[in-house]
Image 1 (cartoon, rainbow over the protein chains, first blue to last red):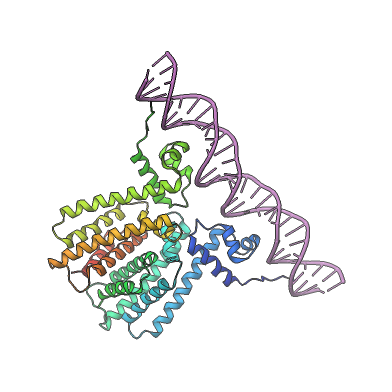
Image 2: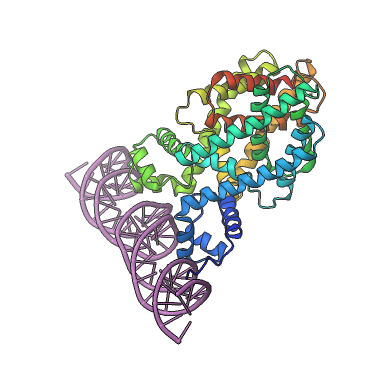
Length: 193
Length: 193
DNA sequence: TTAATTTTGGAACGTTCATTTCAAATAAAA
DNA sequence: TTTTATTTGAAATGAACGTTCCAAAATTAA
């Protein structure tokens, strides 16, 4: 009996994510999303409820993409320190390739909404917890095989890496010179060696 | 002949800045600004032209405040490295004191508008240029008196400091534990020693 | 082919947006 | 006190906002 959903939900989420990424949440209108997805207003509301919920789904897709990319990197990396390096290189690539200077969707969202919206706040806290846990694990392993020094605890280094990555993403909005950014990564990671 | 301006422009700018700081540019309405300043709508338009221009004036006030604070710190500091440390401590104080978790107005603005608004873009590029120049000077002096190592050029270290500060400001939105943040500063600056 | 169900198109909802308008109030100068 | 210039209050502007509504179109099961 049913007429099944005809549009590609993943594609639509990517299209919506792109608008949110370029303009931010508040500057993005439903009309922008209608234009970007080619969907009808009603279809968007049928499928995603409202703008806020659509944004949340976009955030989750964005987060998952990075989680997948990073998981792949971890498999390839032959040391915890190399793994951390390759995560920074991943962001470096993003920055250099992005000719719209959008920065990081999650970092931008944090800056725009973390102190205003409790649902977003929770999402970001969870994202932070996971990222810190990932780095803590990597630093811990790196210290065990001596590729990372033990001057500081894995927890402390994890926060350092989490913080520097956000700085890196912010810097990347106005600077996309690869050499400068590479030097920045090198200095940042020098600390761990 | 004239009826002179009766309100305190500096106070009004501080009040408006606070709203922009809490809510961001796009989420701040003129009504919010009317409520926060106690001024009439017309008075705001008479005095500041429009929302965008008022925001720009707020940014400039915010920037000047930090420039003044930092100038004072530089006078007191008895070494370039100590000066850099005290700048980080200044931001640490801000973060810990700020119970609204607003982050940095300029960093937030960069994340929200840098890729969308050329006037803002120019302001931010200028702010970046000045900040990098300040750090470059300090690092240069520090390397000359050997309180800062010479593994990297002053330019490279300046970008590192600029970047880590933005990361620090972003982290401060969700984390305001002083010990954690102090450790983060210590690790960040360890690199220069 | 008919019946059942969902998606679509597009208009319409009421609200809020940034900005303008203009007469009344105000205050200093003449 | 009158003149001149500015600020103020409050309403009004038209556009844009997120969201809802519903008949028409579409699709599949019966």
